Image (cartoon, rainbow, N blue to C red; front, side, top):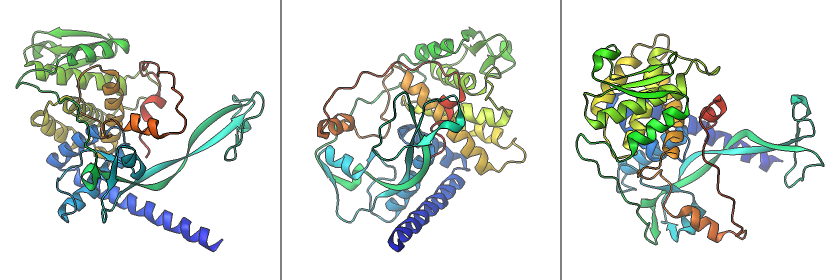
Length: 359
């Protein structure tokens, strides 16, 4: 019993350390250039939650400063056994980056409409006849990942990188974003200049269910603006009952998502995005800059991940080592092929936007 208590206390201490590191990372994001790097990094590691992304970022920076890794930013991160599945091994003396891992519980009920009827299932237990089974997050525990620079072994297959000309838009990005806007029930149109939309680059009209972008900009600016307006559509539509909107927070969220989407296509928007976000973040009363940045980053990341996963464009990687899924499947004793996942449906409920924010 004493050993179990010591293990639990050690785990809780590690989780507390993670929270302290996370707070420090968020505080460092308040300045413009750090915020840009943090948002671009969150895009690159979108297979991780926003909080875990910041934890990886902060711990890798410390490893770089101490000379343990050669590059200031991580390229790919994975767990110990995941690297082994790719034919690579963690080098001796390299400490992993501690992150939050979910603890999932399984619950069963024969009357799922009755919230009081759900019971906790034991490990390995099978449901009774007619019971519905659901899983949900019940806690977190520490886990460890390593950057590719901390490993050695087989080479990592590098995917093609998008190349974008100055002023140009990534191939297919406008059409893909416009289709996602239409899937949300909005039309997409162009106006000759900012005069038609109150001096803005773009405008989302929730009453008319329309998105407009001014055409007298370079293609890169137009596509970034459309990504910004799509984020507004997905996060701030008042017809969605869960939408809570403050203008300053909303603009920071939408522009953060636009930066992530653009960066995933090799497009640097920081010259516009940083002063824009700085101006709107300073307008939020009664909330610290740290809270504004963290709230915006978490919400924007969730929307950006959904958008990026829905696009058929060439993108930079999401932080997961290329080939990992296939390697893990090949090393698993269960070689049965899973049915392909269905295409993502338009976001219409808060659960689809908030499920990944907590860890």
